Length: 81
Length: 81
Length: 152
Length: 152
Image (cartoon, rainbow over all chains, first blue to last red; front, side):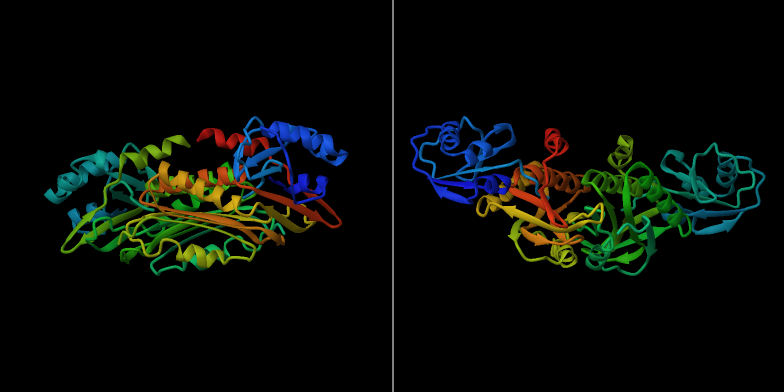
C-alpha cells in the first residue's frame, strides 16, 4: 500500500511517500503501526485531531476500513483558496 | 421648479422635463396639480404605488416637503444592474 | 503596500473592457487577499431580444451609486470598490455593468458585492427597456429585488 | 445561445491571466445575465512575506475540485463554472486561484461562488506555507473556515 504524507506531516516524517506492508484493517490500526515504528512517526501522529486522512484520494475518517485500499494519505487540515 | 420624468412616465407625459410654477408644499400636492392639467398627466400619475419620486436627486416619498426644492423627478421603480 | 482605500464610480455610455477592469482592479494592493467581481450581461432568454436600452438620471445616478458604495465601505472592511454602469443601447451578451470589491477576507468582499448589487438594482436610477423585433417594453421591477434589500 | 453548461477545473503551477480568464468566461452565452468571480491573492499584511508556497495532492486535488464544482451545479442553476488553482511558489500580490460562476440570476451566481470558495478552502488538498525572511511556517486552518461550511 502507498502511504503519502503532505505539508508538515511530510516534513516531520521526512518522506513524501513510502510503500507499507500492513495487515491493518482500518486507518486507525495503520496509524498505530506507524506510530510504533520510530519517534518521527510518533511525533507526526501524536494528535489525530490535527490530522486528516484520505483513502484512495477520498477524504474519510480514522475509523475507515482499508480493505482493498491502494493509497492512504495523511495531512493537516487543508488551507486552499 | 424643474420637473423631470423618466422611463414610461416620460413617455406617457411626452416630455423629459419641464419648468413648473407651483405653490405646492409637498410632492403629493404637486402631483395633484399635475394630474389636474391634462389627461396624459392624470394617466401617468394614476397609480402612485407604481411611481417613485426624487427631490433634488434624493429618493423620497410623496409626503416630502418641497420648500426650496429646485428639481423633482418622477419615475417607475428602478431596474438597474 | 497599503494605499488609501479607493472608491470609484463610473457611469458611461461606452462599452468597458471587463477583463481589463478586473485585471487592473486592486492590482497595486498586496494587503488584500480577496477580490470579488459581479458583471451583469444583457440576457436574451428567448432568443428574440434585439436591443436593450437603459435610461438613467444624469447627476442623480452618480450620487446614488456613490452613496451605495460609501455605505458598503462603512459596513464592511473593504480596501477598494469599483462600480461601472452603462446607459444607452446595447445588444445581447454585452456587459451592462460591473462591481468589484477587494478585502482582506473573502466574506467581506462577497457580502459587500452582494449588497452593492442589491441596492444598485433597486435604488440607483436606471430603467431598462427591451426591444424584441418591433415591440419594446420597460422591464418591470420585481418583488424579489425589493425583498433582497431586507436582509441588509 | 444556450450551449450545454460547462464545468472546468484547472490545477496548475504556472500563473494564469485573471483578466483574460474573466473576460473569456461564459462569453459565448447570451442566456446568462449574472457572472461572479472570486480571486485569491497572496496577501502580505505585514510587509514581510517573501514567498508563498502551495503544496497539493496531485490526482486527489482535481477530483476534489470537480466534486465541489459538480455539487455546486446541482444545488444552483448555473450555466458555467470555472475553478483554477495554482500550486508551487508565488510572491505577494500574485493570484493564487479563481472561481467563476455564470447564472441567469445573480443570487445563484453569488451563492454558488461562495459555496465553491468555502469548500475549496477546507476540502481541497492544498496547504500553504509562508516564508518571511528566513522563517517559514504552514498556514493554520481556522475554525472560521470550518464553520463557514455549516451554512450549506
